[in-house]
Image 1 (tube, rainbow, N blue to C red):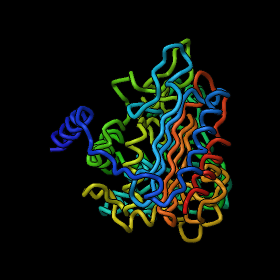
Image 2: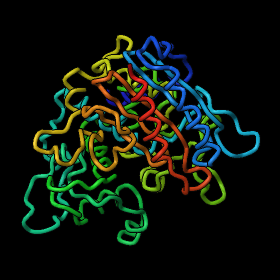
Image 3: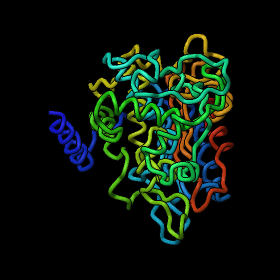
Length: 394
């Protein structure tokens, strides 16, 4: 029976990428309560960033009151002569946006369906899970909520070289073994350490509970139902994908930039590996702003959206919601004018999203700032774009 289910999911994913989704609801900035003249300041800002070689191109969407109020494309996929212009088909490597859009959403679905609880111990779902504590006084049970808020105490990263040195081969089995046998960096629940390891652990929990890979599960339960037809792991068509860094003489195009996801996890990881385009992420943001429903399809319950978009009780000091960022040092993409209820995320390759439920507003900015190499920064660009958008709200 499980094999039939998996085949159905895979077939439905294959069909979905060939069908056209329903168009997004469009309005003018004025109809959405935005000052169009002020909002257009973002165009010069982004064009200047392209001229300064911060990124070869960009895509921007502003959503307000359930409508797409501003949608613009800038520059090209790469700096190469003859490179295609960025347009509605352009797909980006989302890097850590994979955390909230794929992994956290999937985990919340499992919570809603009674498969797991946020207070479950990690060891309830991963056999013999028991990483070494940072000191003997730490006897706090590591729970799923700690993984989602980066308070599990894991180190920020574990490299393929570390795994290979210890076990001789850097494959996923040895990677998970390294996590389990390794030593934590901080006390569980007592410090915020932004770490990809927690989301790989969440991926393992999801796959153990569902019997499906993260790729299969998210395609079948999130992206296909929402007609996010250009979203997923391991993209097969690469013509419209914005390339990232040049590795071994070749641009990474349709191959995840993150080294752990690429070298160890086979391109499918809880922390990175997702590819998508502007309109698909717009659908996702509209779903969140509409309390979990988009175009008649319910992905999350209103309670689920509310829970994963706020800081857990007693953990407010860390500034993290369940898979989302609210007030940590990583939240500068929200700008200076967003409400205190705003949450969002950024990705290492350049994309960002933030959602302000009080203003019924979402801002999505996609870039490939790691092309042709990992030297440019769009941190300031994100913040300035968000400030312009925030100031345009009337």
